Image 1 (cartoon, rainbow, N blue to C red):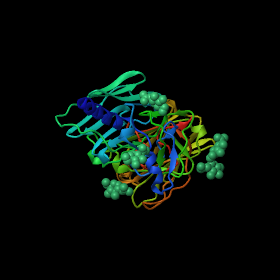
Image 2: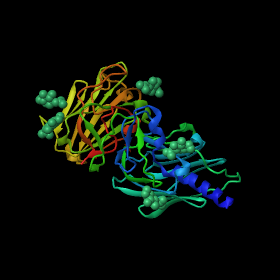
Image 3: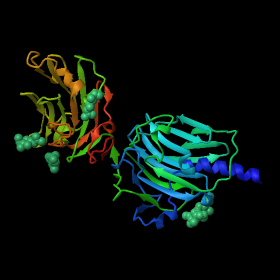
Image 4: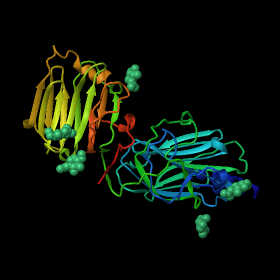
Length: 394
Ligand SMILES: *[C@@H]1O[C@H](CO)[C@@H](O)[C@H](O)[C@H]1NC(C)=O
Ligand SMILES: *[C@@H]1O[C@H](CO)[C@@H](O)[C@H](O)[C@H]1NC(C)=O
Ligand SMILES: *[C@@H]1O[C@H](CO)[C@@H](O)[C@H](O)[C@H]1NC(C)=O
Ligand SMILES: *[C@@H]1O[C@H](CO)[C@@H](O)[C@H](O)[C@H]1NC(C)=O
Ligand SMILES: *[C@@H]1O[C@H](CO)[C@@H](O)[C@H](O)[C@H]1NC(C)=O
C-alpha cells in the first residue's frame, strides 16, 4: 500500500507539472485584488508583459489533485514560445512545454533527473490542435490530435517522498530561472489556448494583467500592425558580411497597407532608406536618400536587392517589372554598412536617437518578411505592444 502511494505520488507530481493551469483558492485571501479567469477560457498568450512572466498562473494543494491528465487546444503560427509550466516544491521539480521550430519541446526536472525531449508534428500551422499531457506510470505522455506525440520515461534511484504541499501552474511563461532550462528558447508565443481542462480542477487562475487581450476568431499568418507602433531591430543581428549584397523580400496585399513598411538608418546619419505604402495614392514608394521609386500598390510581393552601387526592386517575381536605382558609390561609399551597423524598423519610420518613438506607423498585415531568405522574427525586435508578430486577423 505504501508502495502504491509512493508511485502514485511520483506519477502525480510529473503530471501535475505537466498539467498546467489551475488556480488555488487559497490565493484569494491574500489581500491583493487579482484578476481571475477560468482555466477553460480562451487565452491569448502573446499579450505584452515581462519576457518570461506567465500570463496566467494558479496554485493548488497537491492533496486536491485527483486526475493525472490535462487537455487543451493551441493555435499559433509562431514557431517558438512557452506554452505551459508546472512545478512542485517551489520550483525544485518542474515541467515546461514549449514550441521550438514549431515542434513540441518538453523539459522536465525531477530530483536528480533532468530531461528534454522534442518531437511530434509541427503545430504552428494556424489550426487548432488538441493537446493532452498525462502521466502513465513512469511515463509522461504528450498526445497531439489524438496520437502520441512524445513519450518520456523517467526513473530515479532516489526515494520518492509522499507528496504534500503545493502545485503551481502557469501559462505562457515559467516561474523559475530560465537558466534552469536544458534547451533555451525564446518564450514569447503569439498564439491562443482554449478549452483547457487542467487536472480536472475548477479553480480560477490569476493574472497580473489589467485586462486579458482577446484572441481573434480567425487568424492568418503574418505580422499585424494596427498603426500605433513598430518593431526595431539592431541590424547587427543580421548575419551580413561587409559589402555583401543584401536581399529583403516582402509579401502581402500592399493595396491594404498604409504607412511605413520598412526604414533603415545608419548610426549618426539621416534616414537612409524607407519603404512606404500609401492607400490614398495607391502606390508603394521606396526612398533612398533623395531618390525614389514608386510602383502601383496592386502587387503581392516586393523583393529589394541592395547592391554596392544600385538598388534593384522586383515586383511579383516578374523580371519585366524590375526597377533600379543607381546608388552613386562615391556619394554613398559603404552604404551597405547600414545593414550591419544601423537600426532597421518594420512598420514605422525611425527618427534619430536610440530611443525614438517612431512615426508614420503601418496599418495592415505584412504576410511575410525575409532578409537573406530567412524569415524575420519580430519577436526578436524591440516591438510595440500593439504589433502581433505571427498572426493577422482574418
Ligand atoms: C490547502 O491546504 C492548506 C493547508 O493544508 C489549507 O489551509 C488550504 O485551505 C488548502 N487550499 C485549498 C485550495 O484547498
Ligand atoms: C472531474 O471533476 C468532476 C466534477 O468536478 C467529477 O464529477 C469527476 O468525477 C472528476 N473526474 C475525475 C477523473 O476525477
Ligand atoms: C546594437 O548592437 C551593437 C553591437 O552588438 C551594440 O554595441 C549596440 O549597443 C546595440 N544597440 C542596441 C540599441 O541594442
Ligand atoms: C499618402 O499620400 C497622400 C497624398 O499625397 C499624403 O497626404 C499622405 O501623407 C500619404 N500617406 C503616407 C502614409 O505617406
Ligand atoms: C487606408 O488606410 C486607413 C488606415 O490608415 C484606413 O482607415 C482606410 O480604410 C484605408 N483605405 C483603403 C482604401 O484601404
